[in-house]
Length: 386
Image (cartoon, rainbow, N blue to C red; front, side, top):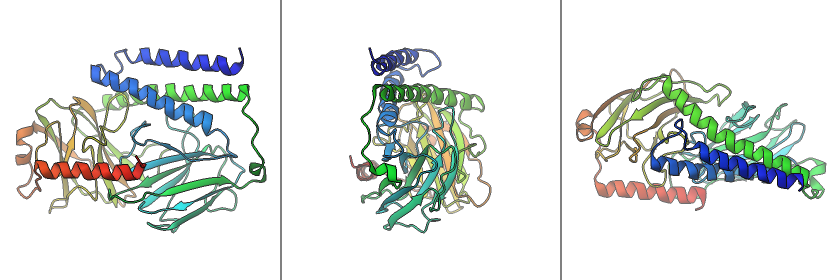
């Protein structure tokens, strides 16, 4: 049997072992959570085997969309589209496209993905810094003498597109090509040895992703107290632009978490809900599990107040925990001009949640809530072309 078939056997064996790991007590224990876990392993297989096998050649780069409505990992931002292309130091690449309704992007040159042994952000630049805005053409050269350098250790060019105002409109398009002379020659057929290497890299990515993010969430939760935010932080080796604050909720079916924070000194901020174990967004197409600076009304005293609960309290700033007893509420603030405040929290009975907010708090009825959710679905259908 050739090395490619040996490697394929290793892939199937390790997937079977990973599935058995989901029954261990350090993973979520509810039956529905376990079902989500099996689906998560399938997603990670699609993501990382696809990346390693079909996006392996830096002479033939193509953007691999991840963290969309299917292949989520590592706490994706609900306002983003993520794209990654494999690159190699010493080469030059050209990225072209159209912004359409995309309002901003961050282009990052990275040494690898966060769940892998080698990772980190090496270069970071925004569309605005490159003079590119909504509706503009995109034409960027990456590499020596270009718009963006490609330092030693570079593995990917990654793009995070930002859609702040969830409209029904054409999303951004991006293409990438290698400008080097050897990229013009036809590629050789994939050899068994090459495929074996790609398969082994891919299954490493699957296992590392599933194990890393479950462990990461457990460790972060153990650092604080449930239903309380820890102070905002910058992720080491992550984006310079980003500040995060974590609150792990533990809410019964009739509980509500009331959150209050001064508006941060940042042009972009957002609250988003994530599942334990898998670090995926909570039912992003089926529930209102995120609100950003364009969607969440700010009170007259310049403070943001919102409610996390399983039952709709009838207030505009509601995040739907979707029947998940525990999970992670993340507060993001990007491009800050000053210290990001730590949100305050309290748990109240859900029927008292509206009364715990100022009298002028905006309310919504069931019809308005349905329209809000339908509008979000329509935008996501445009953004991800589904």
